[in-house]
Image (cartoon, rainbow, N blue to C red; front, side):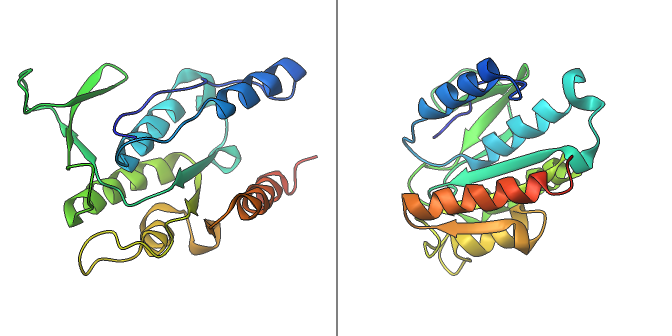
Length: 185
C-alpha cells in the first residue's frame, strides 16, 4: 500500500497459539493503493534491530518481501512541516516523507528501495516473491519488477521467485519454507 503497518510483531510460532495468531494476521492482510516497497523494507530492517531478536544469528533470520506491483513510492527523510505537500510515514518514531505518485514507478523509487534493501540484507536473508507483476516494467526503459527484485532486493537470484496465481504462490512459500528449515534439527 502507500504506508506501512506491523500486523503482528515477533511471535513464537512453535506453539499453537502463536501459529494461530500468525495465520489470523496474514489472513487480514489486504492490498490497496500504490506500492511502497521501500516502507516495508525500512520497517523490516527496523524490526531486526529490536532487542528481541538481536541475539539470533543472521543465518537464522529471514525476510520474505512480497509485492504485487511496481514500486510507486519511496521514503525520504522528512523535510519538516505538515503541509499538504508532506505525506508522512512513521517507522519507530522516525518521520519520513512519502515520495512518488502511487501510479507509476520511477528510477528514484528503485534507487531508494535498493539502498534500503542493502541494510535489510545486512540483517537477514531476503527472499522475494513477485506476485502477478513479473513482466511489469518498473519505469520507462527500466527493468521488469521481477528483474529488479532478483537483482536489487533478494539476497541472491536463487532467493527470488515469481508467481502468477495462487497455486504457484503456495509452491513458492513451500520452497522458501524448505530453504529456511534445511539443516534445522
